[in-house]
Image (cartoon, helix red, strand yellow):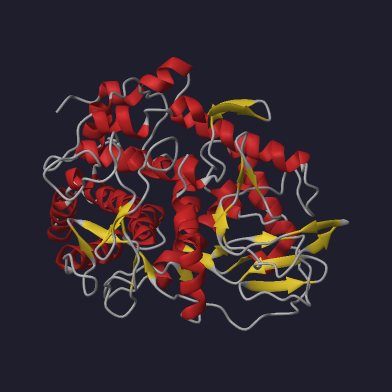
Length: 497
């Protein structure tokens, strides 16, 4: 099992600290103020509007650089920009902004990324071979320090671009330019270059692998891991197989990503499913692809689809929270959720919680599965929020309980802060990443773009199916799914290419 987040945890922490992303340690904070209950419908609308405003207010309009995190804003994230492009359409559909306003923002955004410099140099480029660097500098949108050219983060951006291509379908000069720019950006991407077994190119590294590399650096070459095994990389392969210009073959899926899925299959808290501890692996591809009722060979053999798989993972996480085997403070059937998120600190020595020595971490991929549990008492609202479409009956009550119980410390102007830890009440230890209350624990300072995005998009998919409906019309998504071998459901009603 591969972990994209695990590959960047230490550099990300170091970069945030070096950029002054975090303020001086906080040793005290106001006590939590609980908020009055509200109806589920009112809450869903308020959360959607607040989370949309995160992207609308914080994304730089001159260069379309969505912040990786806010308010610290050390650099932009290409993946967060993909979520921003999707958010603009949701905002237009919901009436938070006009369609014309959203279209102009989107057009200007795609113009920037089409014209931004591409090249193999170590600095001064936004990307190479059509892909984009993981993080970009806020001043000019070029590569931030020595981050990798990221295939998955580029794919999340392309998800937003292709959403825009299919959503802005009117006979209008701005919307026509959006469609054209999205097409040019997507068809420029050289997917064959990043497939490991490709010959005659730079991708000559791992033997006997058909998978797509996680990334590349001009000064170091290929990242050491491929997108293989169950993870958020499904979208990478759908886009790579769907390309009309540089597609990879079906072997990339069959002998790469899906070659050994059986090792990830297991049961956790009574739910049999493909295992991946942090919830983002069950969420990201589903933001743009409606997996309900469509199956590849593996899922046909299991009698379910990837949507049901993510639903089971969500229910298993909730059951783990209700059981709380490690006796963390605050966990319950309504307060739960683990994924990649901020955390309170790197412990200098152990701290004692409920009589047990504990270690705490900053940003890392947390989660719970039958394979492993990575849990330091930190809960991320996006774990439930990005799973709303899978299991609304348990995820929306969880989000509402977080809002009610933790109040304005956690739920504020742009929705939910990234994470909270009820066990971390150590005001003497302090935290550079958030505020510590001696009774109610730690709450993060920042919102994270890649965590805000799934909350907004999956809430909308639950409420109206909007993003899914739009993306079912995109020929590149349809082509990629069919070339992989997905059949059934809505896909059978789409004409072949």
